[in-house]
Amino acid sequence: MISAALIVAIIVALLCSWAAYHKLKRPYLHILTWYLAFHWLVFVIRPVVTYSFGWHGQIDYMLFSPSADDVSWTSIASTLFLVIFTASYISFAPKSIQIKLHPLTSKAMQAFYIVFVLLMPLTLYSTVRMFSVDYTQENTTAQIFGVDDTMEDALLHTGQTAYITMAYNFLVPLAILLIIVRRFDWISLAFVALVAGTRLFLGWERWGLIVLVFAICISYATTSTTKLRLGRILVVLLPVVATFAFLSENRDFLKEAVGMQPASYASTPEGRSLEGIARWVDGPDLAGFDFATYIVAKVPKETRTYSYFLQHLELFTRPIPRVLWSGKPVGPPVPFFNLSDYGNFRGRSPTIVGDGWMSAGFFGVAVNATVYGLLFGWLGRLVNAKNNIYWSIFHVFLLALAFQFFRDGDILSLLRFGLWMFVPIVFWRWTALLLTHQRPRLPSKMMTSGRALS
Image (cartoon, rainbow, N blue to C red; front, top):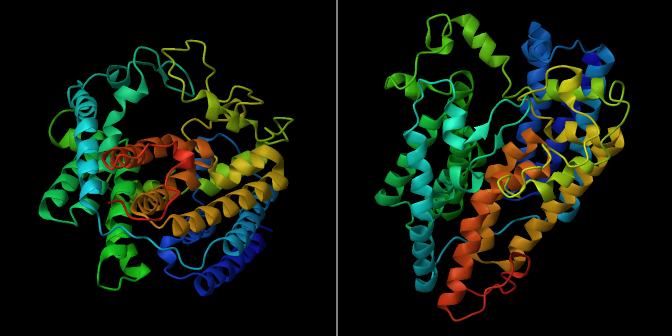
């Protein structure tokens, strides 16, 4: 039954890829293209490889043994999501998304540099804190974030707020914006290299490295006079993906190289052996199928209930700093179950398919696929309608965050990481409006005109 389900998954993925290729222009600007890449890697290729070679490292980590039915239902659920997401996106999105990053008016450039200067002190303060930590100690997390790291499934910011301790994340959008504004000159490229080196040093903040390079590649493809194919962009991204995977096995290799932290197993000859490489292939980065299988196996058979989409209520509680609300719930304010109570799901992500199943089974998967397909299709239309640099950059950032969103599976993840990415755009827009003696508006009402700033 597993083999039949995987064969069907391959056939359907091919058909959906064909439909996207023939319906969409400049596919790298459509989020559907990036989901198709994610789906092929996570829900088609990896399960075929792991079940062919008998690699079940993540299954063993989560302390459960899925039945053949669990695996098959997971494959069917992911295929269902793909079909509905593809159909809903293609039916609502524009055939071509227009990204316009140039030309910039003098007021827009002035506004950007003002925002850059205003955000940099907090960003540098947070970054310097990261480099001042004694990484030879075991409590580095508490040193950096001032958190209670005794919780099993969460790190609680008790003495600090993440809005300050994690402000170093502003480096990523500022680097991307700088390289767009300065049109890839040597100053902007040097700043990008510095930011990339910082992310490599931090190690566990890998998402920033991926977003940085994805956004730069997409931006270059839209501004370059040379016609760039999607394949060429992917070739550029391959070394970055390899670095991301390497950091999964040893996130502290730079700290070890400069003697700031003792060497880990991954730095030993055994860790670099064939066995170590196989362990990396069977690691968590592309194991979304296994994580979704865990959810299919446990919900609702063992949990006795679904979450009925109420896990998304955390959207309203998560942004409130714990220093202002000491009793803030850990996770959703209305929890129906904790997945780690039925195995070991700590540090794992439900994926966009698993999140739908957790909400309401196949119905939840269909709802997620429909809502997200229509939402992203509508955003594509909005980018075309607004026709300005701010919405264009917003779309570029959204595409760069797509893999992280698909992997984590919930809208909270997109907003949590998107906070650092989108805030500089909002500030830039507001500052530009002030410089042109216009009244800034709320983000939901911003950019109602497609005219260029003067």
